[in-house]
Image 1 (cartoon, one colour):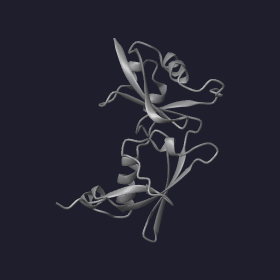
Image 2: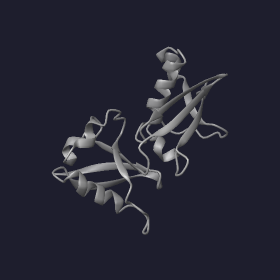
Image 3: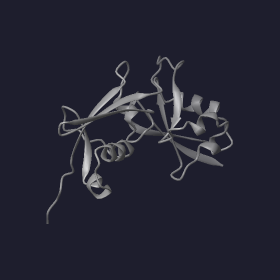
Image 4: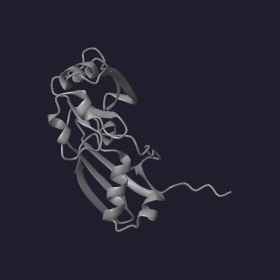
Length: 165
């Protein structure tokens, strides 16, 4: 049965997808994902990681069906295995290393907890890329924001825009 696999990467700005049999091997999936890259891209050191999978439990999966989570199969293709993240909130700064497939929403939750914020307060804030007005959506992988050779992302935790009406 075909399954749709959503992929994010440092190599493309939009989320892409491939359809592959859920009986396909992870090696076959990696080959299909690498076919999305521009011709001439060195794919020898690229790794696939599962969205928000910190313990790499899926790293030993042999078939695509073993990668499936609640929202389907969502992967990240990247040259690095870790991204250093810094989040600033006022004068406070927290640091942590995440896998490239970690979502911005998960980083926001982690940072809010580190700053001692209540869940309701965290929900009223967003991560903004430092020095810009860019506020990536919560489902964006931080690996899309960390381009080789710079594997660091710096965010400011700022209040979300409120619409009064």
